[in-house]
Amino acid sequence: MSTLLKDLYSKEFYNHLANALTAVIPDFDKRKFIRMIFVKDFDGKELKERMRHTTEVLRQFLPADYARAAPVIEKLVKRLQKEEKISILPCLFLPDYIEQYGLEDFTRSVRAMELVTCFITCEFAVRPFLLKYGDRMIRQMKVWSQHEDHRVRRLASEGMRPRLPWAMAVPALKKDPAPVLRILEILKNDPHEWVRRSVANNLNDISKDHPELVMDIARRWKNISPETDAVIRHGCRTLLKHGHPEMLRYYQLDSRPISLDDFSIKTLRVPAGGELQFTFSFTNGSRKPQTIRLEYAVYFKRAGGSFSKKVFKISEKEYAPGASVTIQRKQSFKPITTRKYYTGEQRLSVILNGKEYPAGKFELRG
Image (cartoon, rainbow, N blue to C red):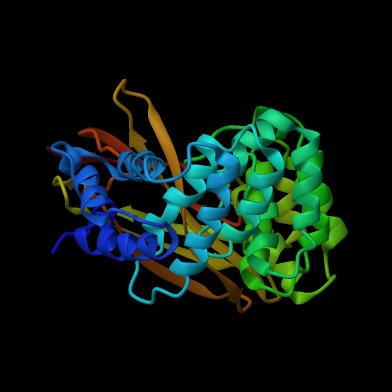
């Protein structure tokens, strides 16, 4: 059985979709729709290509005038919400339809996105609207941030992330996140965890370009509530991984009383697809309990021979005065879609409360 995301666009999915379309489009030709979907090169299409293909085929069965098509999309969403067996993720073609054909109709598209995002997120669809309409769309996002439905409130944050993965870039928000921060101020203590998680991810995006700005937010939001403290912690994770001095002080992560007693790479030659094994020991030299954040960094070899550093968290907890602890760890080199491994020398270091100790070397073999 396939586990590829693109295969969610299956015969079963399109059958459910066609049944829903039959209910909302007069004289809908189900057989023609299925035939147009499964063209000769369908199997070779990747996830986004299948989504866009679905969007383009659907347009052939809707009114060419977007003003007349938008209400049909809304009816389709309401119908799909009743379809218990339909997969949700491939329904991303719905916000894609708004993005592709509704950009010139701000009012109808905003209405449609507000409805659609309660079924399948419109976080990608809002991006071209932010680019085209600027302040007008930002004002709409602010309205959404106070919506009664948490999925719409989440859209207000997620859609404005400066570094939203797989999404169209909005350079102005990356350069000046002030409009984003006004939204986050409204949502920072939202009652829904899904919304707060988006606020944290948004802060993390901003921290990569404006670390001091996020530090200021962390200070202002501190102790507002346990939930907001959790937002700060998750939103500042990149600053912690990079050992940002002020962020380490914020969490009282002092490296001075901690000593690295032993660090040993057990597998100096790692076979392709194998595991790196290493161990290290440390001591809390303080006379009082000390919170210690344990991390390690792998310096992966790049194609050109340089190295790309990736930090991995092990744990963060309190240790008793004088405690000595030994940690054993493994790092897999099994192939993954998000990283390409290159054979040859790699490096490994240990990080204790932000202090990085000199890296050891190991070899990845082909």
